[in-house]
Amino acid sequence: MNDRMICGSCGEELAAGASICLHCGWDDRTALVTPPRPSILGQLRAGGWRLIVYGLIVVLPILGFMRLRTTGPGPDLPTTLRWMVLGDGGRAAELETIHRMYEIATAASRYSIREQEMPPFDGDWAEILAPSSTARIRGWIPLVFFGADTGMAPASVREMYEVRSVDGWGRPYRVDTRPLARGLAALDDPQVAADFDEGLQATFFTKDKPDLENGQWVRVEIESAGADGDFDTGDDLRMVTYMAVGHVFRLLYDPDEVQRQIERAYTIGRHYYRIEGSDYDLIDARLLAEYRLTSIY
Image 1: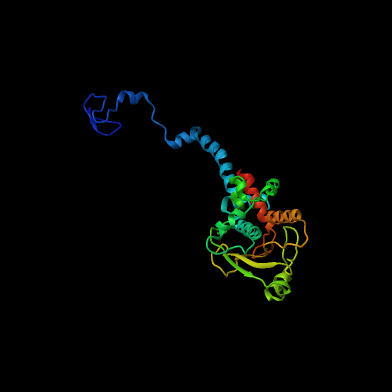
Image 2: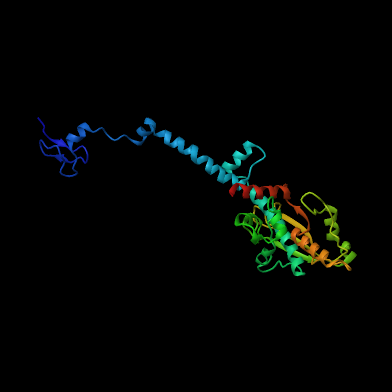
């Protein structure tokens, strides 16, 4: 009869009649009454899968919301779900670029009114124009008329309305500025004539032409390289805008009326613009900005 015994834990040979392994401490007597530890697969079969399912039910909506606040909602539910999983193909970055180009031009217009000179677009121009940015969004108009500087708004609002020198993809803009001839001579400029033929917007909803016969005007072109990061390709985004340098004063105006008009012009930051290279318009871009602000904060 073979009395040789093997440790059920480490595989070492035990002395005849021994029940405890001197190498690892395994107790044969305990092993006889202790059931083996179930495997992970066994635990899942026994009901551990519920923990995974319940965790996904809690985590997936949170991850989906975080993704949705970046891409924004799509035109329908299937599109929105696809964007949440696969990304929106750069739509949010494109809309953010359009929105920020408009904010840059608006801040530049306010700068020209406040400083009575052309806005700068060389060197650290974003830092110079930043104090002239504003938070003209739904719910903040009373604050805007009290003081238009974005610094008066909370950080959650400033995030989407501050002036930055980079587009929605994080790449620098290319900006070109050109002062126009004074008076009717500006209308003889072929580039100006082409811009007028294509049309310019005065607000989100209306089209109009700048009064180039009065005051000094400057044409500004703000351009983004688009999704591919290369300028002068088919996906470039461009905003052409006309803004007055300073403010035109009328003789014999009441001083209080002059002050009121200057404050209003600064608050609005009026410029005449056109967006090129995108199927979206400024209303789409503003809606995305407001959606991101209200969803995040």
